[in-house]
Length: 235
Ligand SMILES: [Zn+2]
Image 1 (cartoon, helix red, strand yellow):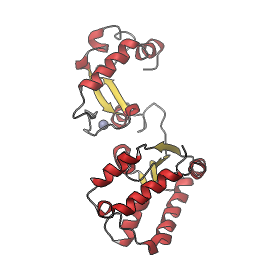
Image 2: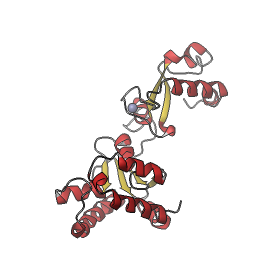
Image 3: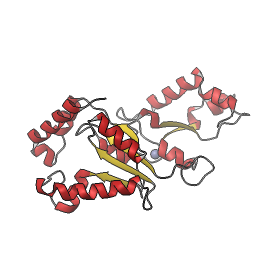
């Protein structure tokens, strides 16, 4: 797809408008759904409008191919990459052992973001899940006295991520990371990319209201976490 005329086509207003209309017309309940895996695509950059009959320098001027709704599907970037084998040993650049730090306020949807973008075999570091694993308590019920052991596990895995030890493909580190200096230091130390999951305080509180787990039963505690995050956050 990287030849000049095709690049030009993908930058044209015609294509951009067509693409926009396709995405709008295929939404379900206001959500953009991947027509391949059925998952919701949250990040607009991840929406791929893919031609079934692939565009070439010879056929791109034929609107029955290039601008035909029946010839395009809306896919998430993961399905799209898989199709073009960008990560699985195909000719394109293969990014091995990428590391992402997914940060944002409590209840902003960080775990959902990871769930949506990860693949089997990825390594995920999430304090809440680590607590769960070693305390045997309900999710988010985190006994304070276990903190040091949970941090020790986390630090151990993060060290492995830093040295790219072990067979993972992509690692995801989930956390608040409100402090910009700490966040950027960690990212540069790990060679990681930062992914900000933005949400307003109100959105976080609304999600807390409908969380239907330990967090909802301990709302005041979690509102405190949310407020603390917003107090400390520097973009
Ligand atoms: Zn998909």
